[in-house]
Length: 353
Image 1 (spheres, rainbow, N blue to C red):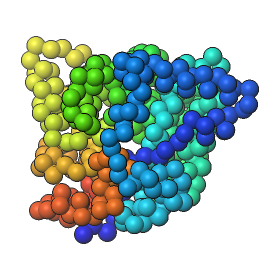
Image 2 (cartoon, rainbow, N blue to C red):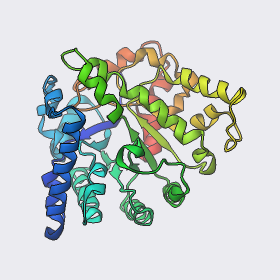
Image 3 (cartoon, rainbow, N blue to C red):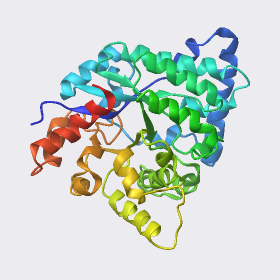
Image 4 (cartoon, one colour):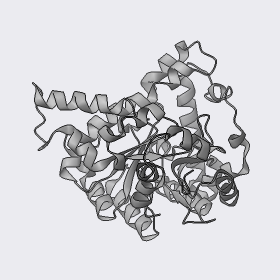
């Protein structure tokens, strides 16, 4: 049984009202309007169905645990599960709201990050937020990264699919000052699995009770994210940039890297690259998983130092409160030194825990 577990993907329930309470009064109306507009857009994408309907079929003890929304209670949940530390992601994708605000998006961003910081204040050594940074104004984003780094932040969470929120793709030069600032701060970039609007049509066709066909797809869409970071040369230009793909699982990634390498060796030209695409993955990218024994069979193809474990608390796939048992099952027959790297050591190094 492992003595140390670090979850690199756990979640915090933050209601929009908590963010609003951390904003100046003059901008709170603009925040309310943006939240309502984003919700209405989501309902329209789903063919007039409230997205809460699709979550109603899931239940798990963790989702009712007070640690979902309270930092001190989260520590108790972690102690029950035998987890040393967690990297925290908000359930609110606040960067979807900022572009919808007439004014006050900077103040909304700062209010959001205060809420995340307050949650982690119960024990900053064990609770590590992935802070969301708006990319509307890159000069402002750079200043935010510097301010967060000065506070000890270790992870920046940005949209996984920038086009989904009206932003240019990340190979555009406008982002270069931000990638340089994040590299200089020795922080990592989190690209969390998320919903993609093009999949909503599939969701409406999915006949399974919990929409299993639909929910099986987003992890595979992170192939697009891998390609956009590597093939246009972003990682080549910024060799100290570190990208964490959150919730992709493992088994499909070696195949995809092989396919990129085959393209590079064949008729496709990637003038921004000095090495095969997989080399940039092995140098600068990380993967996370919850329960993926088959994927761990590919750990040497992926790199044992590129894989990190998580509980995904409190989502339906979570290993809580039986994480040690799940880890023991997943790592049966795997050398202790490799297991310890994957369940704790890689995360400890990346996030300075």
